[in-house]
Structure formats: C-alpha cells, structure tokens
Image (cartoon, rainbow, N blue to C red; front, side, top):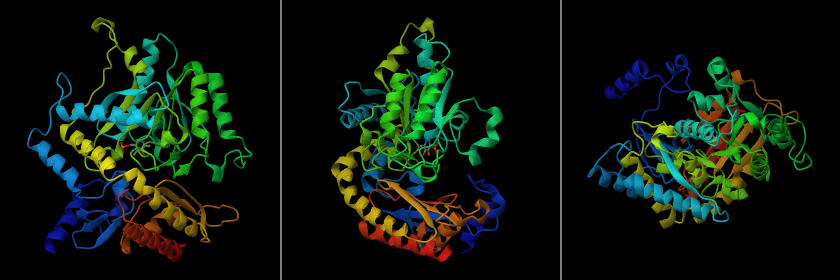
Length: 455
Ligand SMILES: *Cc1c(COP(=O)(O)O)cnc(C)c1O
C-alpha cells in the first residue's frame, strides 16, 4: 500500500503527462497500470479495465500476446539494436519484404507498387519523412515551386512541427502558428457539421469541389495532399462519405500532386480491411504506417513510397540527391521482430475475416447509442468509432468544451471498468481487434450506461 502511495507521489513529482493539464492531474487519483492480459488492463490496486482505446489506438492482438512476446525474446537473444546507417539487420530486412508483400496484395489492382520502406519510430516522424520526401521528389524532378502542402480541416498528423503544420485542429495547433510553415487547408468531409450546410449525397461532395478550387489555383505550389483516408481520427472520428477518397486521388492525378495517405491510425485492420485506402481501391504515392504495426508493443513506423519516388533520389553522390533523414532507432530489430510476428498473426488468426462479425455487433450497439437523447451523431469505420455528444439534438448544439462532458463520460466508464478517452465531446471507442464478442458487449453496455448517467 505504501509502495502504491510512493508511486503516485513520484508520478506527480516527476512525470509531465502528454495532452494533460498537470494542475488537474495533481488533484486526481492516477490509475497506475501494472499489467495487461488480452483486452484487459490491471492497475496496482488490482482493478481491471477493458482497454477500450487499444492503449491509444496501437494494440491489435491484446496484451501479453504469446507470439509477439516470443518474437521479442527470441530477438533479444540475438541483438536488441544496431543501426541502419551504414549497416542493415535481419528483422528490418524481413519486415520490409513482408510489408511490401502485404501492400502488393492489398493494392493488387494497380500496376504500380508501394515498395520502398523508410523506417522511423512513431507516427509523427513517419509523416515528417513523407513530407520531406514529397518536397524533395519534386526538386529532383526539376519541378520548381512546390513548397507546400494541402491538408484538411480537423486533420491530425502528429505533434512534431512539420506534422503540426499540416494539422487542422485549432485547439492543439493554433498556438504554434508563428513557427509553422504555411499550408493550404481544404474543408473536412464532416457531414454531420457540413461547412457548406448541405447533405450527402445531394451535395455532390461540395467539400471536394472546394479542394479542387484550391488545387486549381495553387497546384504549382503544392507538393502533395496529405489525408487520413476514410476517417479523420483525432479530429473527432470524422468519417468521410463514400467516394470521397477516390475523388481526392483523381484530383491529385489531375493537378500533378502526390497523395500521401496517413494510415497511422487506420492501418493494420482497424477499418475492417488491412489498409483504409483499400476500401476505395486508391493507391497512394506514399503511405505512413505506425501505431498498430507492432501490435501496440514497440514504437516503430514505416513510410512506404512508390518506386518512382525512390528512383528520383538516385544519382551520383556529388549530385546530393540523397534523402538526408534518419533516426537513432531507425529499423530497430526488436520492433521489427515484433512487427513480423504481428503479420504472422494476421494470417494465422484470420483477423480480417474474424473481425467482420465483431464490426456487425459493434454497429448494432452503436445504433442503440445513437438513439440516446444527448447523442447527436454516431459514426464508425470498422472498429473505430466516435459518439458525438450534444446539448441539443435538434439544433446540434454542442456542450461547451469547458463542461468536459466527454471527459465526464469516460471517467464514469473508467470507474465501471472501461478505459476510454474522449476527443472533446466525442467519445472514442477503438478496442483491440482481438476483443471477444462478450467483452465487446460488456464494454459497449458500460459506455452506454455512462452516457445515460452523465448527460
Ligand atoms: C497518432 C497519429 C499520428 C501520430 O503518431 P505518433 O506515434 O503519436 O507520433 C499521426 N497520424 C495519425 C493519423 C495518427 O492517428
């Protein structure tokens, strides 16, 4: 007991938590996690919680998954880390080959391939890499002036400055405006709160028309369009209407800009397919992968480019076409070994097949939640969902953010054994893909009850 108190005190003394007002944290009783098993987390007092957000969107196969544990232990018996600068290593090679194989079968309708894997260690860096690659690609192609990007309102691509520059969430990003590079911003495909005040499909993708106007005027300045395909996750689980992504691809072709798909959140089965882009049969020029890549075990990311982009960087050393970018832990063998084990599990456990039934249950329960008097909109893409709370359903009036309604609901759920995190007034639900249908049911009931109790 004393030990627990000491841990609590040390946390408050020494840890500065991410996205956290530490003055509030100081008055809270922190939940200190000591173990996990399957879809459950356990704290130092022995209380269990369903991991309703997959430990912030990373976990796929549950905690303490034997095959992943074994792969990491096995790799530890060889070497924990060596560098990809001037050397290479076995797991990094094996993973790159396997990723390209998976991408090939996911996008088999296309003749072009995503087949050049650049490693880094988190989602934000995978985006930085993509942006720098896209910019430098045009330079090498001797196309002048493509010095910026087009991104979306409500976009989230990470917290490093390049990623923040293409971000569109004012609460997180606006403060940093003076130190960001300038980008163009297209409307978010947020049908529930459409900025043109229209309805899908009568709107004919009005938000895309706005994007086209920007491209028409500024394509000579734009190196790439970066988007979170199908669902803008951190922006509030905003699901794009059908056909949106395919239209973005067409525009990129028409205006000679690269399409960067940030699948950091959506990749590895979260949307019901291996990659979100598959739903609309869209091949991006560059794809950013992280979060689920190691099943939520270790930090790892891959920015995978089409061969044509890679080829533009080839030349004699003196031409300085080298991609000057790299991180200390690039291609970390432990993380790559974990990722290989995950790709095995996708096959062995037929994950993509088995989640279809869970998605159906998920959607039925979500529809029930959508009937509640303070739920304005419920949306999902596979096992990623957002439940938007409103003060008034008729007028869609949101709760004032200071009321912390989302936070209150998640707090209630946590007291009742489900750990989830809100995004403002949106309750995010994103369980591990391996969650059992019983646990899925328990989780959704607890969240339903929490919404009823709090709103
Ligand atoms: C989480 C996220 C990122 C950033 O990843 P980190 O590992 O947190 O740096 C980037 N893009 C998207 C779409 C994300 O959801």
